[in-house]
Length: 298
Image (cartoon, rainbow, N blue to C red; front, side, top):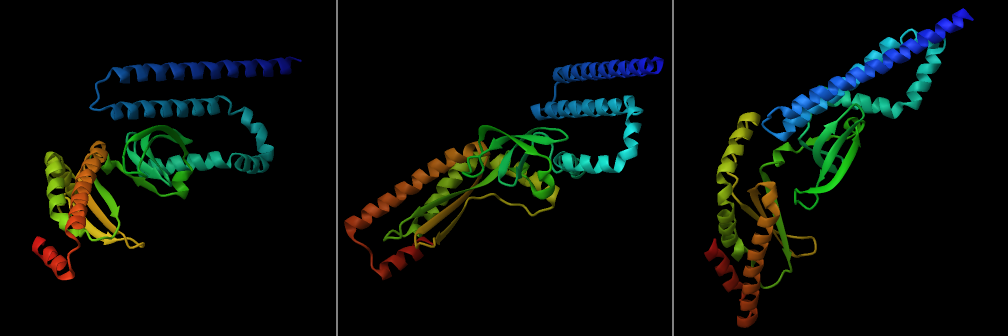
């Protein structure tokens, strides 16, 4: 009877110790986060990174402390350790993969809180990470608007092992944005618009010139690449259905991409409709006249 009472007393003591450990750790975490929120960081992402690290460190300390407190109780599973481990691995396989994925990410430093990343078909800004998952704010890359959709993505960390991680952080401030316009193949020669559209694009992008020089210097210094002048460029081709495709590439901040695309598309459509209307009024040019016009413009 006394032996049972002693065991119960020890168990009760360990419960109390565990509760105190958790309470103290959470109190310390609250105090650290409170102090971090009072600090003046250069940007919000720096504050988020430190807070995220403090939370993960506290969770690790609690886990290690609980293991140390209850280590003597774990000796009872030693008799069937092999069966226990196999059953544990099978039951927690996904959690183990997520934990290994977090270790892989931490060792490679493929991204940090605040970066833009793409995992599989999911793209977003990293908001927080822990041992099991990574939280993203979804960014619309499919339509090239580069805007936050308002959706939150919770990515299991095991995806870092089975899918490549694309760090899109270079797209946060300055991006190459391609505007594709497809028109019916008709009597209008789209090559006649090339010079005017490039001039208009350079006019719209002139205000980004200093930003272009800055990121050109940063990227060339970091990756040892040759300088890219970031001038607008045009590629004219045809689709598989025989339609004319006009691809205009400009360099701009992500939040300016949609606005710039609408302006240049409107300008292209104005040129196209004017040329189309003129062709319908005056009749189509013969082949020699069309070729001569193209050569004169280039």
